[in-house]
Length: 233
Image 1 (cartoon, rainbow, N blue to C red):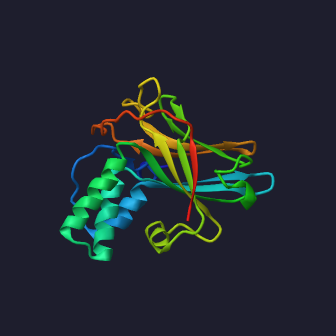
Image 2: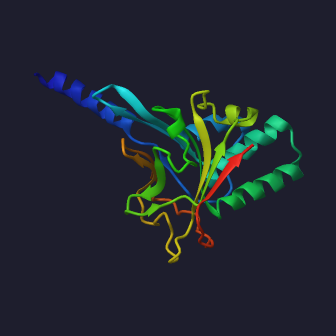
Image 3: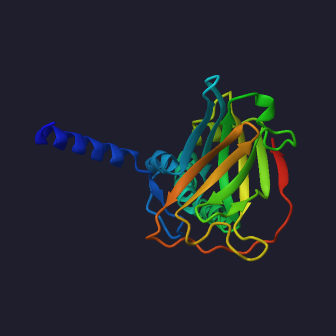
């Protein structure tokens, strides 16, 4: 192999590594300068999908897609919503304050899953094939404090989370910001935060790599309590 060929291969490998490098996200607060057309890019930045496939039968046991409804995501969501529904400045202000305040109460995810037997994909059922946990790179693992099944996704959910299909079950899942002992559920030193779906058939993880050069939003203590299961609509 001559030097020119080696150079081409090295360049191709470098481009492949750049293309495969994960998109970093920041959990910091603060104002954003989004416009409505930015929503799709922000949604993509905060959404992850993973498949759990059995090689023996080439069967997709679980496909999980989740959007981390962070401060950054919610800002873009509200800007898009305000534009779509032609809300007033005052209405925008109230909606933005309300939705951003929710990020101080917990870590919120919009989740859609499919694959395997549908009847065992309902995360709100005691016989569900899967349990979901909030995890991070430091070893923290946290159970949800609320799981809400969305029985019939409405027009807004189908539009703003376009990965939903008739084959998916959709949920809103909230995890606490702070553990009962006062420690944050996502460590300030974490290099990534993720969701783990685990069960007898295997496990799958969705990860958001964190930009550690930017500070994260401060956690607000929340009262500890047993997980709630809610079915919407």
